[in-house]
Structures are given as C-alpha cells and as structure tokens.
Length: 542
Image 1: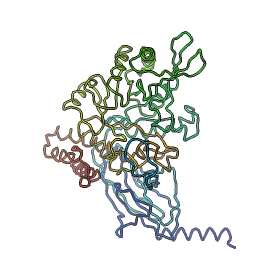
Image 2: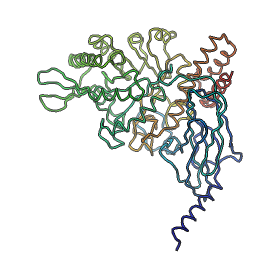
Image 3: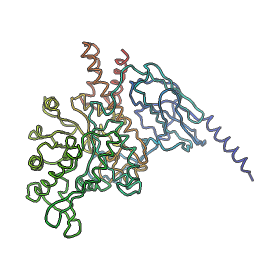
Image 4: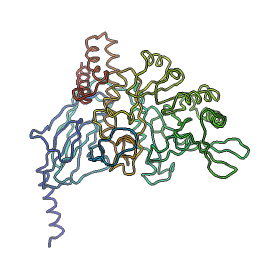
C-alpha cells in the first residue's frame, strides 16, 4: 500500500513526465481547433503582433498533451505589458443558420468559444486545448518592441509586440457606434439571485465592464412586460411599474429603471437610454389594476383610443421624470422590426406627448421614417439610398446596420468563422454607416456554458458572452473589428490632412474587399480581414 508521501511523489512524476511531452505553439485566431487537433511538426515558439497604444490585442496558442498522457495545466503570461492568459473551453453548436424553430435532429459538435477567465488550471488528457492571450497596451506605452512570455506547464513561447506611436481613442470616445442589447434577467436567473438585489448588481458588473471596454453606446431599458414574447429564454420584466389607480389615472414607479441606468453609467456606459417599446411583438401591455388588486393586460393596436391614452399618459410622465434626472436628452423610445403604419401611429403619439423625444427603429427601411428617427438601423444585407447616411450624419442622427438570424454569414453565431466578428464592424463603417447593432449580448440558454443552441434561431445568436464573467472568442474578435475600424478612420484622417495620397490609396484598396461585401470561398472573412490588418500595420509604422 502506497503512503501519502509516495502518492504525492508519483503524481509529481506523472505531471512532470506529461510536461516533458507537452507541446506549445502559437496558432491562428481564425481557426476553431478541435480537442483532437494534431499540432504541426514545426511549432511556432516566437511570434510578432502589431498594436497601437490603447489597443486590446489577442493571440491564440495551443497546448497539446499526447495520447496516454495526463496533465493538470495552468497558463501564465509575463512581461512588461498588462496581459492575461486563459484556457478556451468548448460549447455545443450545430449547422443551423436560420430563423424559426431550431431543429433538434442536426448533429452537434463542440466549438472553442468560452474564454475561461475563471479557471486557474485545466485537466488535459491526450488532447489539444487553445489558450487565449489578451494584452491591454497602455495608452501611455512607449512605442517600440515588447516581449511577453507564455508559460503552460513548463513549456514557454515568446510573444513579441510592436507598439506603434499611434493611439486609439478611449472606448467611450470612439466614433464607432456600438449597440448590443442587454438582458439583465438572464444573469439573475443563472446566478439564482433576486432581480435587482445587491447580489444581482454584483453579478452584472463584469458584463457592464465588457460592454464599456468594447465602447458600448446604449443602455437597454424595458418599459413594459415582455416586449419580444418567446424569442428570449428569460422574461424581460418591466423596469417601470405602471399602475392604473382606482380613479382611472395612472402612476409609475421608476425605481428599478433609475437604478439600472445609474448602474450602467457608474460602469462607463452613459450614452443613449434605449427604451423598449411602444410596439411589442404581441401588443399586450401589462399594468397593475389598483381596484382589482391584480395585474391585467391591455391587448390593443396602435390605432385605438386605449393605446393612445395608455401611451400619452406614460410618455408625459416619463418625460417629466427624465428631465428631473437630467436624462431626457439621452433617452430614446425604441422599436424593433415593426411595420410602417404602426411606427407612424406611435410616432404621432410621441410627438403629441413630447416632440423632443428621440425615436429609433431597427428594421426595414422606410423613406417615410428617414427624417423622423434619431437612430435608424437596417439589416446588413440592405442599403440606404445614396446620400441618405451622409445627410443624416450632418443632422447629428445615427445610422447603423444589424445582423440577426436571417443572414447565415458573416454573423456572430457560435458556428460562424471567428473572423466574421472582425469583418462586421469594418464593413459597417467602410460602407459609411456609424456602427453596428446586435439584438442579444447575454440572452443565455438554460446551460450557456455547455450548449449554445436555443429553441429558436441559430446557435449562439442569443448570446456571445458567458456566465460568471467569462469572455468569448466572438466578443474579443468583435472588439478587434471595432478597433480595426477606428484605425482605418484615424489613418484616413491623417493621410487626408497630410496630403498623403499614396498611403490613402493603399488604405482604401485594402478596405475595398470588405466594403464590397463579398464573402465566399475565395474571399473569406479571415482573408480580407488579415489583408486589411497587414496593410494597416504597415501604414501605422510610417
């Protein structure tokens, strides 16, 4: 029988033997590496990436433990720049890329997407595992070369970072308009805490910080119960409690709304407050009936007196509250994929209640709305008439593009190429738009760390950030795309100011493959993104 001491010695010997056999190499961010991926004979133990000051850069390494070997691995990055190293975990996905009911007959596989910032070590046995390295280049970093060392179970490889003299704006000051809709109730459900309790806000903090780091421009606020019906796994409960009093008048409790908006501002998101919605998908409005002592629903349409009475009273009181808080200029009444007649009816009531309210729509293009909406977002597959975006920008209006289940690729599904997340922001701004909207940042499934498939839509369409503060490859690459868009904008401004026509021409030629919107086997998102990135790296060093 082995003693405790001999067991410890044997365990250490096994771990050391596994470390001796382990292989570590740098790899491409554009590939989803399966756990049975065989490393090439020639390992890359030294690599170079280019960065601007203020940039968040990512790199991928692979650790391979041979068949028959087992190891408990930890990852560490060390050097002169703030950096972290985390193992990438797998989540279930499949080939479904459409709207509607998600079939349960498709073969599923695991895709590496979860950047597990919470795991200090992982147990590996005869497999390959990606390691994600994040480097936050300080805004005051001295331009030049920096060396970081990634260590995984005794193996070491070098990451060289060439820092340009160019500096990105702070995320809160970037020109790119990012609108990722939030679902705070998913966090409460998964964390098993009371919505809007102290514990709930503590759990929400990492996601507000992720949004702020990406440059999020908006706060999602829910005015009435369930604006989207069954398309979300968790109920969207109202942040404003509406009560019909015994005398027929209306009263409103703004406490949750106020706490949510202030919480987001405290965590760096103090832009537009996007309020949903005057036109929900099921046209049911829940309110508390004081006389009956219970909740009731008003089922109506936008052209009825009951609808006008409900919203005229709500909007007038809401406007007064917002002005008291100093938030009125930030607030926008928002609709999602609603038809023209309903939009015009709602807009007329808004104008009657408070004509200075901002209004938005994410949906189809309607010329009748183009001068009425502060923020207008259409599908990435559509286009505004020539000159429309420029005219709106001159008026200080926001004009974006969005993706949803209707476009197979490029998109942010868990089964999409990771380079799609980089391509999308660059496409939005290279075609002249202000930014990008995605309807779901954290609408988690029942088991989001295991299965990204939901009963509706493509897998991963409902979320691309993970519980307990975990990041994702999709999130990090979206940030990469936003930063690449900002680099292109700043270099263009620099070249125009300096009269550098040759450099400007090189930049525009590198942007053209993305601007044209062609994605196929010859022009993959990875190929066009990497071509642009290489060009920008060269132009940044001049």
